Image (tube, rainbow, N blue to C red; front, side, top):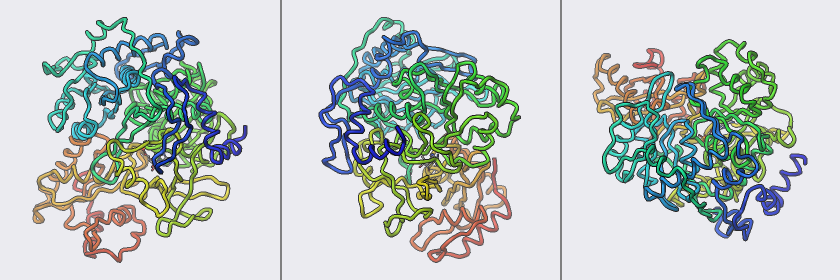
Length: 633
Ligand code: AMP
């Protein structure tokens, strides 16, 4: 079927469309109603239906493909590769689920998972899904403060952690971070389950709280844990993401809608089916990791590669070597990773047999034309940009190579995905933007299956964050966009203060709050400055309490701010430069003019400055930029 026809059907007859797509998954009890939209913008897809993500991802494939690899976890850090068949995955997930039950975890309980890209992270997620517990994976690169914020919001009954991760040959101990986060949290989890990889010989267990997974695994070797059938709209997991405030938002996903959207997108977008191999380079801690490393490929009976390591180690051909070795059909990565590879010898792209590789998907941040062209020509493969958000859980804008590939336009993530009724709206008047006219990208509700159902424990924040921007009830993506005459969309950056560093979403407010914990700092403003590799990097402008501090004191304070950010938020948020200044540009009502700061930093037009309180502040920033930062990476 042609893309246009199917898309039109998904918009004009959504219930018929999604009733058809729902057949791709197993229902213990079929849905009573395809869409219940009694309380807009809240909606319930497949209402009354009962299903289970773990059953769809694991049990359902036991009969047809027990000996096919389900997950292949490759670590070029530890040098260990573990290939797990569907039969083995079923066993391991049952064992893990039995351990969760023994630790008192049940239906609806939250479980925080803090682990690197190792196969046990997937076991833990699937085991939670099996018993109806709600997992919340926290990216291993986040530090104790971040972990504590998420613990306090999710209030987990259990935290599952690895002893350590590894990056660039260095062991990163997780346990001290877990202990620190539990000390910081107001509601620390009563139990901590540790999966030890032998990377941290000094690991100290806290009696009564910490539990070692190895003996539990031995005890429950033969356990069979029944699947908990869940109503389609019950929460399956929480995934925290940054917004404009310092407090992360717990994006809440459902069960049935998520499974159906993933099954559809695996087929039409990612073009991967039973027995085929998908390699997503994401970490399990991100939305891509949830959707296209764990649940998506498993739901369709494919093989999924999980990778721990750098794209350049042991050499810059490692990813292509893995593609050749495992017969990868679809690869999914980020523009930043490709820009890292672009610094290496292009001969690496030609060294391995890529005859089975069909597509390279890139997402998470804007894909620039030179990067897209370089990798597409280097590999001789089509590169497919796709746009989505943690909130949506699957692509909003994309092409559909599994169905009917429309021409690729570099710079555009493509056309609306099925079920997404997209509009571009003028941010002031709320009027529809014309072709090639800039506005805010919005989704007209009901949001399709797979998108967030609410923010955990905070419906009011869900409404305020996403549905309060226009007179009409519309989901704001908080991204600027234009639609061209052919219907292709272009994404032009965020409308809020969120920045995107190497595909990782960070709130400038979170970084400012971390900088401001330094005792010497009076006030801080953080912007995302353009960076050749990472897309954007955090740059700090800060005033000191002691305005008369000498050059040495200013440099020491700047270095201290960087330490604070790294300790509180982790290496992902580490600033690239810190400028110590005597004033920050603000409006008369005291709002930081981050956009003017960014414009000055990038030597572009600072825009409307009529609301500026103190014109000297701009001169001060200009002087600081000429003088150079007090600290730089
Ligand atoms: P996250 O929720 O961390 O995946 O971040 C989502 C944000 O990343 C979006 O709101 C966009 O600002 C940006 N983004 C994701 N994919 C793309 C893309 N293909 N092109 C441009 N921006 C993107």
